[in-house]
Length: 497
Image 1 (cartoon, helix red, strand yellow):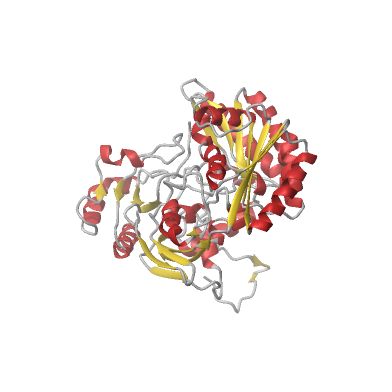
Image 2: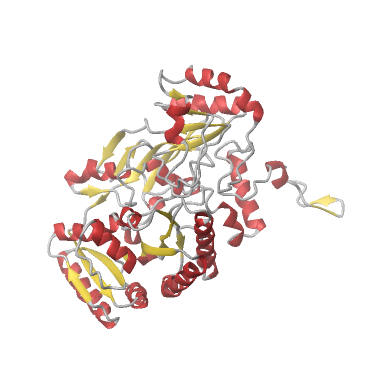
């Protein structure tokens, strides 16, 4: 495929040996990789359509090292791409030929667990699931649970504002972090928030969460840990049509029930999952909805009765309630393995990520099938139904000429459809390079310029992760131009920056 990225700066590439040498003076021996064979694992993230070898890879181990690397990059005018676990699905950590790839994998320690304040302080390279594992003995857990939670890093979760199957009730990453330590492009180290619940002044933690590595490098995260509910039970529901499953989802949320999780699959995904990891899913169902209800025993019993009643009104042909925690986990095993399962029914797939209003689910899934017919490709659906976050998996064959381009065109049409019905381009995977050139379908030029002004406040030279998110990145001087009318500027008494 053709991917437009910032043109490599020949002057930087010519100075590669000097850059590598100065990086080696900052970090421990072996923590700078400049051999092509060593750097090959870093040439892409989970979106393998995009590949680019970095100028050099550096693996710092301390905040002081990160600070020194950033200061060096600023002084030498070198680009920097931060990278976590490399599980990004939008090309957000794609390297640059003339940029330092700052790999944070060695920041992998849990620094503190504070049960009294229900918080944990962790380094950004800690795997998402490792946080819950560290606190489970005392009945706590970390709520956001992406499907890649065994591998994705908490720093990457902050960069993408990652979600997961239980984020309907308990929120995404932005709702579950309390504090950040970060290093700015010039090497300055700042701290935002802490273990307290609210911060004064601007919500800079909110600004950083989902910023995709464009504003700073996270070196420490304080996360909120939650007490596990008294009981959690799963309800497995099969419907004869996709529309009935979608109507059930909208009706359940509309009735005021907020489940711990609410996921949906179409028949292609149901059958693929059962073939890959049998979980007792009804193979003949056109749509499957998994609902998890948690709370006290009496509350959960009441909610199961209500949910089952709503499912019955919408024609459910399968209603199965978990009778043990092992069975509840089994319900989820299929959903957690849906992506690799779908990989077994096609040579390749492209995972998209858009969010829509819940009452548009049926319409969008129907139109998605029609788009598939137009592009000559199949699509399998598995998604966070409760919050309308779609993850269509476009099946194609990369070895077949033209198939990759058709898959990308199909994916772009799906995202345009999401925006058309009142949704957004992304739910939790970020914009990266995959959706960058579609930003104009959702934002006006004025909108994008205002967002870029924020980028300029943190990174005026555009050295942090350039080429991501914004289809056209204006120079900060251009964005700061004053409006002159009739020979006068507005508010001349105010200082100009």
